[in-house]
Length: 340
Image 1 (cartoon, one colour):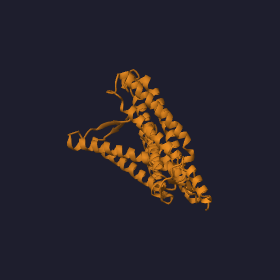
Image 2: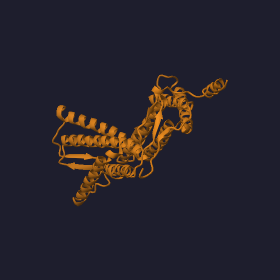
Image 3: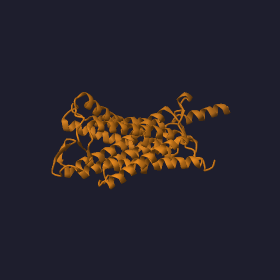
Image 4: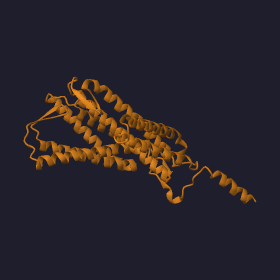
């Protein structure tokens, strides 16, 4: 009789919970917050490295096969004249920059998985920072101020401020014996974590794109006519709104993505992301209906409207599925105390 009562209680408790099979469970890689941040930065650098590599290959292809002159004496890049540079030189420098970004990303991803491998990453970051410092000082002595050049400034901030600081923090945590959190993830949690990480990376890339577009617009005559997103206006009128809208949108997506990662790792904290998914889905439906009303049908719908709708629909479905899972201690390993 007691056994029957216990079985009945377990059945009642299982009405709202979906217990995953053992084969559906996996253990996440233990990472400290610094390692998590390093992982995202490294993924962004890998994507940028791939894009720069593609640009370098296309430029080299144009130089070699399409008859683009390889003997031009004056080239202007980001507002700086490169005297004596040829398109071939520029393509080789572009390819070298891509290789540097990809190597940095590879070493960063390795350190994000295993903190004991961070030394190679730190050495590369400090070496690049030193080279940038030498170039800036040398150019200053030659009468050219490169520190405010956007490419040099972005490279300096990336390697000296971001990458080196993250490398130092990961090393400090490793030396103090800190261990990252490891979570037992179901299939739904893994899928949601992947979508959320994609959102975090895309938000970072959107911020970079917003800065690039802002800089390009700032170099134009303020009275120049510019067409962006079906809107034609002057460069002066678009410069500040473009930067503000891009950065605000990137910040919102970054926060939502981080909430998704937290909710995927810890189902008890899925609530905020669930609310964000509902808001995102409602916004997507409203945008879709607005486009339909504007064009009078489904023939000219924007791809972004359908993409947002599908994305937040998938996030909402996965969030609800995770919310129904059994409540338990998700963290199998906590942050170890220093010296453990």
